[in-house]
Length: 342
Image (cartoon, rainbow, N blue to C red):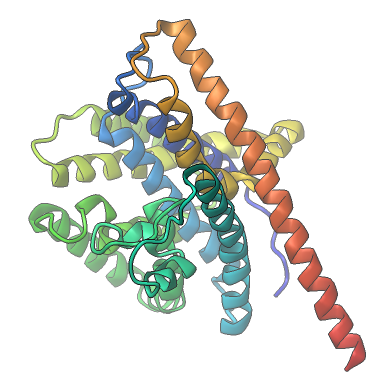
């Protein structure tokens, strides 16, 4: 498949999404460690929910942009597999060894069959359903794996019945958000709700140019969706996702207006490490903040801790990225040798 020209605003939104999720988790763990910090960021659920919804949207937009006209299942599956699993396995094994070294005992307690769930990076997503060997990553990693499996079907449906699909998908999404009772899977992790965000991204990538008036309306709606009080988790997810859908338009408009090549390159480089950041950030945040229990900080102290956490995240994300690159290069070289031998 011919490689298409990159759309900058996808990288732009990817970086913003990453910043939102990491920042939310940074503040979200203050209470459990009894850390009192400057209330710079509201760590209500919406902040993180918006970042996750944006993540699903850019995933849908990116895949639809690359595979709208043609999709070869074998090539698609191989690319998704290589893009997800080697880095996840390296991170997982590293954390397992670290935990074993610190605790002097294995993190694996229970049926070894649970390792299969971890092998496919589904442990975070399924941890609310059954006991797993969940060590690293986020719940949305397992969710996006399922959506990647569904994408070839979604692509056909969206291409063939674009209007009907978006109307039906919107109705189903609203019904789930309004009437789903939190049970086995929390509403914010519901596959149908996440798929809807993904599908919206598939549609919005077809917009050639976002207008200023659209961004203006989107900004007002995004602020409203974020600020509106919610009576329960379902409504909170509804408002947060609505804010994310509106914010996507705002950020896409801004991204389209950024023509400076240096700025574009910076965001492209940061975006390149986003998956590694997603894998390591949560564990690093919990470990670091655990050492700052029962502390009180003003704005300066809070920001110092924030940038300290980011400094460590960047180091380990870079190490993970390079380790993954090295492993993949070894396999590529072996594959070339086999092809020459044949």
